[in-house]
Image 1 (cartoon, rainbow, N blue to C red):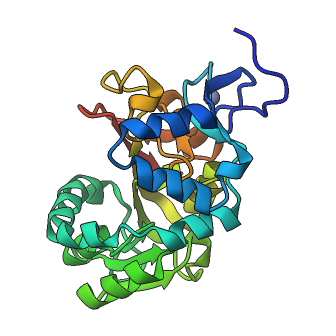
Image 2 (image 1 turned 45 degrees about the vertical axis):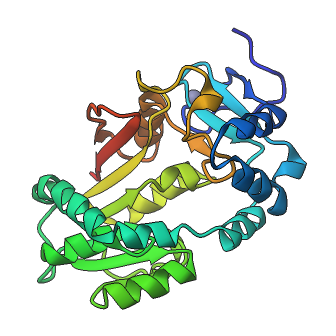
Length: 275
Ligand SMILES: [Zn+2]
């Protein structure tokens, strides 16, 4: 397989072998077959991304799919200012707390003993902070960081004992490290996942646990035709990882020890441990 000239290497595994998976025109055309199509068509155009006609490139080496060119911070800010998903999150809040609680039962024994009286937990891209609330109920000192001020306001009202931070991971004040960082369906939204994982590692305590969930582009139950897969939604989802792509990026960012357990649905679970 030959790579198209001019494409930069795969942002996840660094391979130069990348090829066109879908043009922007094909993506927009596929929207006529989706219930969320009209909203996505309008969202892509009003934030300015559609003008750049970004392509979806697949990596012949790791199989991951990424947008190229990447959306700018400004375009993403416009996209997320216009489109909130908070109302759905509110309705399912207690269900989400329960799901996070189940995951924490497994993860907490993997996390190191705290320096202070409590283990510190940070939920990134937290929305209203349901996993942080589950951690708080389990005895963690719970922090949550979220870029959408609307979600932060609702979270603070619902869970007043969580320490909320507005913004992104880099906006969380640097004090004590965290024994656990948790990000559900977040890394696929991040333009620079290598920078994101590097920052996660820096903010974790030695032997700290990073837990992520993200769609799995290499899963056997993913629709064969890429554009038939509901997780394809540029510019909301920028990188769709396979386990090979995720494993390569984890290794490069200092998470040599990680598990990507089997999952029955086309979603990936990442458990990574800091050295
Ligand atoms: Zn790759």
